[in-house]
Image (cartoon, rainbow, N blue to C red; front, top):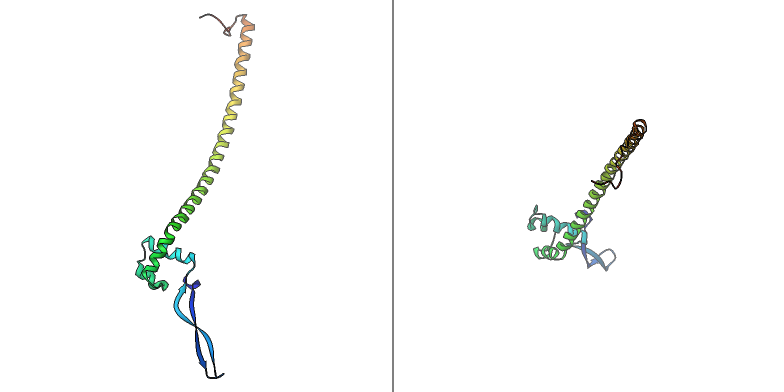
Length: 150
């Protein structure tokens, strides 16, 4: 990040002996232009508590503590929103992965239940056949009559 920061310059007039005229040159001011991403990164470093303000000011050539605190006022809520969005995205990814896993589990359970249903259908048909054979062989009613009195 620091290598990408653009150093501010100011225009300065100086006498050019060779051409015998004044020329305009850009002189570095020792200050830097910070992008919003730079500012958010610096504020997040400070908020994380790993680096004190004094060290950040030296490290990034910030003009004063007040500049850092102004950035905090401006970007802390944005940073919280950004981190919440990142958490939401990671939660969505986890939910998507768990949803895919859940889908696979449900497909396996569905196949198992379909096999169990087929087995129960065969068992029911076998019982019906057994009852029909018993009723015809022994000539007795085995099935309960609907509407019988208790």
